[in-house]
Every structure is written in structure tokens, then in C-alpha cells.
Amino acid sequence: LTVSLATRLDDVYSDNMSADDNSVNIENAKARYHHGDLREALIEEGLKLLAERSADDLSLREVARRAGVSATAVYRHFPDKQAMLFALCERGARALGEMQRAAMEAAGGGKAGFDATGQAYVRLALATPSLFRLLMSVKPSQGHFTPDDTLVSEAMRDLRRNVALALPEGASETQRTHAAIHAWSLVHGLAMLMLDGQIPADEALIDSIASEVFLPG
Amino acid sequence: LTVSLATRLDDVYSDNMSADDNSVNIENAKARYHHGDLREALIEEGLKLLAERSADDLSLREVARRAGVSATAVYRHFPDKQAMLFALCERGARALGEMQRAAMEAAGGGKAGFDATGQAYVRLALATPSLFRLLMSVKPSQGHFTPDDTLVSEAMRDLRRNVALALPEGASETQRTHAAIHAWSLVHGLAMLMLDGQIPADEALIDSIASEVFLPG
DNA sequence: TGTACATCAGTGAACGCGCGTTCACTGATGTAC
DNA sequence: TGTACATCAGTGAACGCGCGTTCACTGATGTAC
Image (cartoon, rainbow over all chains, first blue to last red; front, side, top):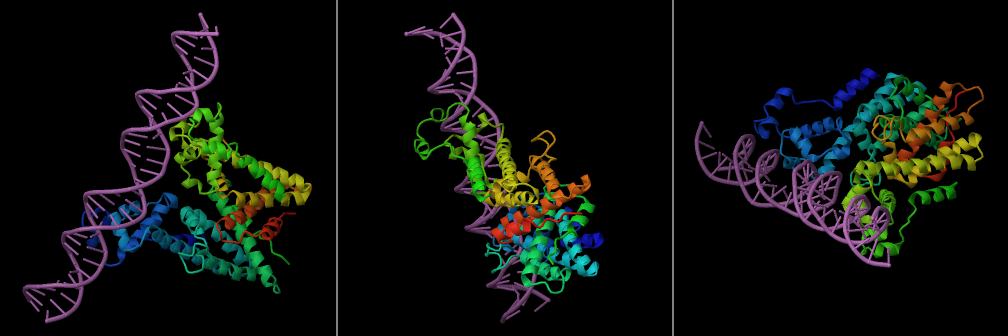
């Protein structure tokens, strides 16, 4: 799982620009990026910056600077800063979803698989703290991002499906929803407390807490 | 419990300045505050502002403005902005601790009392979101605030004591710590997910989830 | 193959903003004689 | 009781900062004839 986590994160943070490309910053931007590539490069630099600072401290100008481009160039690819942040969120949500799926699969489904998704959730949070926090800040009520849904709620749908696999056969819809919320709260709290340094980010702790979900029936 | 919560929050947010005091802003500040009162007024305005915006969006200048005082006056009472924020944290920590104690007492101790502290935790978070988040952001590793401890870790000490009351007699130290972390994670995750709008801030949900703590043995 | 032209992703200068913090100051308060 | 003086919590002007965003522009690319 740890390996597959690393692989997934490499996907998210993949770096198309080599160090050489950075050192020939003198050439103009159009020569450096083929058509459509700057958008991608900005997202990548944004994700890299989120590894260094919080989303609140991430500025559009710095992302542009890192990509070797003027601040105004960003506006060719995003209507405003918020839209750029949202693009970063989408990457985070994708990574979260993929990791959950991979963890479930690797553990062979059932209760073990369900536990694995919980552990993967915490590990993703610890691996990409700012992105994880940013992701959570996109509320369903902030409907200007997506028509009527959260990015996270997609992962939540998966969670409700997964929780069914860990519950006894005849569990009701209500029981499933309740168990899903319970499980999500548990791993989310663990992740946040570890991110905030209130609890040691201990591997064994993640594994044990995440497999102690209270399941009704 | 709800009543005692309201009472406690009134304590935290108590407003010593009447509306009249605000309307006679023309008089100079020295006339308005007796010696030492401005510090208190600044803290109160800070807490009120935290009810409107996040700690990140709270500026020293605005706190001063609300208190009817120049921005530089703040420096007579706090060495810098961070110190002022920390003073707000202290209030939050105090409120959290008092609420936990009150909840435990009101529920008559034992497992019921322990569950009540969990519910109170979530309710405090929902009542004062920004203050709660700010409180959590004070890390043990940021030792410049307190010598070698977190503000929150004081509440954590209480938690470990409380969890013992809900555990079977012969529980080991390890089991107690583990159960405390588990319980904290559960209610903290529930609180954060509700604050972020990922889960409805439903009263019944708080009560039921917070009493489903997994207890070993 | 060469020329004219439209497109559009980049540019740098400029805007107004609010911030945290510093500085030299002022004027009310309280004490010493 | 009156006067001289130290204290110190306030003041407003000023600083430098980086931000998001706008504007008119430029110059490479690709297409049409």
C-alpha cells in the first residue's frame, strides 16, 4: 500500500519540466511550452507550492513566477485565482479517489479492504496536507464550483458503497449512511489531529485506529 | 447542556462595552477605558470578529478599529499580532476546558458523562468555528507560545482522565491512551466535517456518533 | 513557394488595496516637594 | 493647596510589502490566396 501510495502521489505531482527547462528560463514562454502546456505547468507548480505552504499563503503571482511566466499569463488559462485553486482541488480529489480504490483492491475487499481505505485516507492527508485541507474547504454550498455537488462527496459516494462491504448482509440504508459518517469522522479526525501536530503521526496508530470503526449490528 | 453551552459562550464573548460606549467614540480612548481595560476590549473584539471571519482574515488593524482605537495602540498591550492571536487562543482553550468539565458534571459522570464531553466538544466547534480552528493550529512544536506544551493538550489531559471513567476497571495505561485518541479523533472528525459543510450539522447526529466510541476490552 | 493577414498566448507597467510595524509625538494622570 | 515633573497609553503619518487584477501591447504561429 505504501508503495502504491507513493506511485499515486508521483502521478499527482508528476513534473513534466526537467531541471534543464528551468535553467533556460531566458527563452520566452511560448518557446518553452507547446500549446496548452502552460495550464498544466501552472497546476503542477501550484501542487508543488502546496507542498511548501498552506493554500492561504499560495499566491497566483508566485505560481506564475515558479512556472517562469508573468502573472498575467495565468489569466489566459484561468478566469481568476479561485478557478486555479479549484483546478488544484480537482487533482486532489482525483488522487483521493484513486488511492481509495487502489487500497480497497490491494487489500482484497471486505472488512480488510474497508480498513485499508481508511488508512489510505489518513496517509494521503499526511502526504499532502495543504492540498487535503484545501480539498475539504470546498463546500457543497459553494455551488459556484460544481453545479450541485462537492468534490469530496464523490469520494463519499465511494465510501458509502465500501461501507456496505464491511457491514452485515441485512444492514438498512440508514445504518449504512450512519456507519459511513462514523467511519469518515474517525479517519478524518485522526488525519486532522495528526496534521495539526496534536497527535504523533505514527504509522501503527493509523493502522490500528482506522480499523476500529464502530459497526452497528 | 445546551443552556450551559450558551452560558459558557456568553462568558467567552461577554461584551463589557455597551452600545452607548461605541457611539461616543468621539471622546479619546483614555477616557473610555480605565487602566488595563483596552487589552480586555481588544480580546473581546477579536473574539467577536472570529465569529464573522476566519483567523486568517482577522487583521490587527480591524480589531483596533472595532475597539475604537488606533492600530498602534494595540502595541501597548501585545508585542505583535501573533501574541494577540494567542490571547484569543487562551480564551478558546479555557472555554473548551470549562465546557468539557460542565458537560461531564451535568451528565453525572461515567459513560454518559464521557459521551456528553464528546458532544460538548462538537457543539463548541460549531458555535465558534474560527476560534476552534485557531485553537487547533497552535502546535506543541511551536514552542514559542507556551514553554513545552499545547493549549489543547491541557484539554487532552482531561480527556485521558475522563476516558478512564468510561473504561472497564483494569484497563492499562496503553489502552487508556489509545481509547482517548480514538475518541478524540471521532469527535474531532465529526466537528471538522460539519464545520466544512461536508456533513449536515445535525443535532441528533452529534448525539449518536459521539456516543459510539469504540472502547477496548 | 511567397505574401498578407487574423489569432491569441504571452508581456510589463500600472492600479488600488489593506496589511504589520516603526516613529516621533502628545497630553492626561499621579507623585514629590 | 499649588507647582514641577516623570510616566506612559494613546495618536496619526509614514514605511515597504505583495497581492489580484486591468490594460494596451507584441510577436510568433498558422492559414488563405
